[in-house]
Length: 467
Image (cartoon, rainbow, N blue to C red):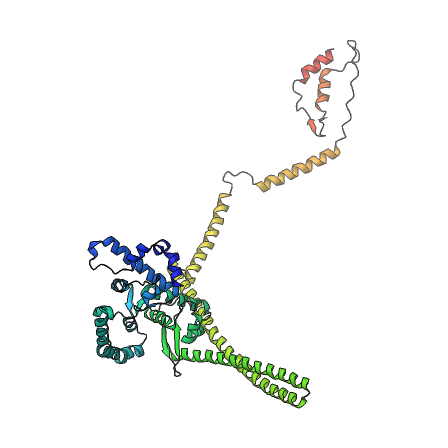
């Protein structure tokens, strides 16, 4: 199956026998002879090894079994030890023992590594491994360094898988106080699609411990427990007794829930068995099944009550986190308000002074407007003018009521000549009579009165009288 994936990835090179014979052959001892070909071959196998590990979701490379992963027909590459050594020199790989020793997660792990693991590892390496490796090297023709490669860890893939595990946990965790602590076995079941074997899973967890994203401890029941740091928390997590108590409470919830499901299944079995006895006519057996069902139901009801109490306690703990967030928000808002008022100098005394100044300013403005509205020329005020106007209008109304309505003007009769000296009135008397007459216009008001507007009419009247 692996061969097919390589055929898809390197289709042209993998199908070319001549090219693959060169790639499967050992490296030349002197790179300077053909550095371009040497580097191309090294890059080909480096990429292929990392691609193989990523595709198979494994983080550990075994130098002994790795060549058989790239078997092509009956041939296997014989140059992979040089490739692994070069990757080890470049920091792309790291020996498994060095990787585990370089990561600690607390004083217990540190003391275990220093006092137990390292001495045993040194004893085994010095007294057993090196002599055996030397013997194997003498038989196979390998050097001492080649025989001691051991299992190697692909560092880039360890980082990738560790981040995937961390993201998987953050997506499933709803409450940091109760969900950030899980059992290692439960976490392994959730991450089986991320890594293919438990060893790779543990290496990813060790990397998270190195990055201070989680910590691992062992309970009194020898169960490994993993505590993750909160998503936005930069401080490394610390396992406390309170965290362990919350973990025990969650374990009790899980076990009680499982027990309720088991009792419910037993009740169903008793009910079905009672039906079978009834069909067979065994009423006593059916009755005993129902009695047993009632007892199991009573036990189940008690477990359900206990389960609800446990869940209520967990909800109370989870609510504490929300209450803390609300309290922190209140505290932050209060501090922000104090800082803003202090920055802009907003105090009750300052606000009172400003409002007093505003009132005084408005009073001053009213006084200014009153002063401006006074009449400096001594002219009559508008009130006096309005009063006089009303008086005039009232007098006009009275005059209009007394004056007779104006008659329609009739066409004056044709004037005939009067003989001289007959019935004549002295013209001065006629002028005086006309001056005492009043003439109305079309609006019903007097247009001419007394001698107003009659200047110049005397000469005209003298002419009429002389006619």
